[in-house]
Length: 484
Image (cartoon, rainbow, N blue to C red):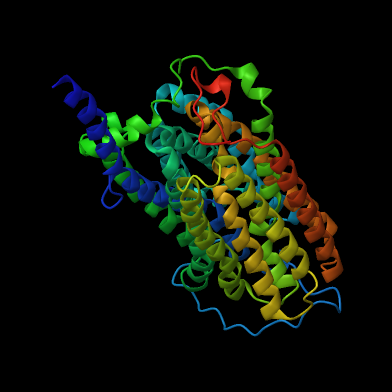
């Protein structure tokens, strides 16, 4: 009987670990709901850049093309009269820059505190109230704009403060919810919401402005955020052990797969080891480099579509969304492939992370440079820009989730650190790009694309040299490897 128990005990535990289906599971439910959350986060982030066109007095908008090298403008339909009169403002270009960039000044403030608070106070409510606060301030945007540019800047900074905690909080939650061999799948499903938020918000904001008026951009997207908060509050829990409706099989599957990774001294944070960790520095450099291209295109792609390719804001809202749709699709596909490669045990975690990072950073650099040489070939330019962003989605299974590989217990803090540095491109990249494109010529935009491509390649190579795929000694008392 003793021998039978010795045999059947591990066998039963093995069956439990192998019999936690994905369909209707709590962990995949969390992935879908968090994806909805990041959809809201990015919708609220990018809608102002589209609405700004309608918020400005026409006499203060860019008047005409300066160079004969720019393409012939496309015809656009006449905008219908709105039933209400939305305000327009005489903000100069400097004021517009401060308004558009103010979000990132708030966003950068709460990255590291967000990771720390998520570990100390619980990730669920930090994530929830972060998005809720952003949604509420979004609803106040039309009122703030009427009061003056300074009020709108303050509201945008506060929106950034709220959104700043979301990614660190979610990484902290995934440290308790994502089995190691499902991380790529779960996290790419979760963070695809950010891409989809961009894909939907860019064209939809243009249509809302066109047919209803710019205030409704903020009212409608803000309301979507409120609905998300209600679902999040009632359906999500910080860990499998605190979830009242999770199956016992799934609970054991998750907790047993993570028991060798989570630190036994969660109250102690090894700050010195963290800030001197070269694997973390590799993620920082890669994240900074990738975001330089990402934020430059996110804020200036509609401008490029309008000033160079000649598409109106209504047309380029859809065209500007295509690259992010490709990015979202590639992110999900790469997550499936990455986990499959790791499950086969033929490829180590570090090999998968580095390979996907190289493809997801060098590939975009190549097509971004190529887009600058398409001239006025509209189809080819949009194709190359779409391929550039789509290949960037592959990095979602590379450096982007490597925090959970090297230090799952401190993933939120690590994400806060890397995202702090990765926010800097959002603050300075578009400013530098606009300074280099004063005359809006194709040649000037080629310089912008070359700079972004060079930074991307450097980040990819740095990560390929110094990136790691195992839990670091400072992150756990007894290290556990997935094959570095």
